[in-house]
Image (cartoon, one colour):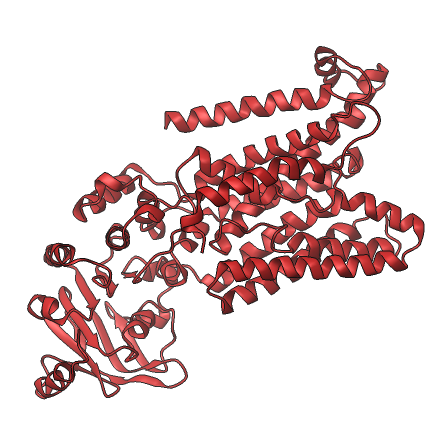
Length: 236
Length: 330
């Protein structure tokens, strides 16, 4: 569960002002908005990479500013849009790195960790390419590896930053199925995307970033802002 | 797992063979069997035992330490900059160490003074911080490498300037040092070098979780629970200690840090530092010994500078890497 309390988000000025709402324990939350409205910044603030300008964010009733990084990494996982192809980095390496917060200081994977990595690979349908180099993967395969890594991290909250950005249409459909499967397991998924048509049906709740505010689909004036956002041809 | 164990076994065997070759070869004709036997005798018992224990053994051990240490520092720098072409030499870190050593030697210190490793570490640290700072503003790895090469040239120019005004004896000892030499360390300074290298490598290994996390990008590493800035600073400090202390004792040795981790990438297909660090360590030790053996090939009292040997093996390796990894080099 995530609760925002008068949270102001941004770098040197507020990108999003006075966020005040609570997100449920599970389900899929869609995060929409034009480029530069602060979608990625919101994610970075939740994982503690970017400081809040004002206000508080609570995860499971704990203020994020008081949660040590190692502990936060067991509660929230974050999938960046892309990953670097570096040297001999393999799909297995990326996914098993998701286990890092749970490992002892020497960082050796135990049988249980290996099982979880295998399961995550299986769930994302990339078991057959686990030994493949990231540099030899398609953008879609890389994306799946990043999400599998977040799954291996075993957190109750997953933040996905534009996971469909580099996927072809069938892969997008497939990812959607996988996301609803994951959320049914009791996880909260917050996903940012420009693929409105895909996510509109899937999301349990929609968040729209507009006019430096977050408008949720439960707000009365949501439709007004949503129509403004979609009809201006800014979406897609 | 079996292939992993086999790799360690083969590398271990190679290291042993090179070590025996290393102590058996030299201007004095001592057979390999005699050389091995002399390892276990007292140094005073025979001239052969003296040569082995006082000269060849320390030199081989220095070659092992320097090769292993530089290779590990190369691997860590490559991770830090997520660029497989990074390394202490190409990024100008060794040149920074050289410049500070030149200042100290030309100011009157002699090789072996404790001021040298500290000057070298400081020099290495200065340049690597500069490079790290530059890397934060750049998205292109190629530009970063060119900046490294420019910094190296700048430091070399400063060194030349110092040489120009130096008196002849200081100049001579400095010029010999720049060519790279495993024998100058000797038995007296070997323990200090060993402490620097072994401690830093152990710390690098202890950081392998953080190093693995860095491969996920800045936000990725943060989401795994690391404070990326302080992690980077610590890692940078350790690589500077590694590259700096070795440069102080053996001279600026090129190619080891760049070539060895990439040689290992031909053997194993992973970027996991728990696997990479031990393998890079072993391969680096072999590389160091091989350079030492090549540098003694003339067979008489003359030896080639280590840098000649390391470039002879290292340069072709680097060209092969460039061809193989062109896709993943930005």
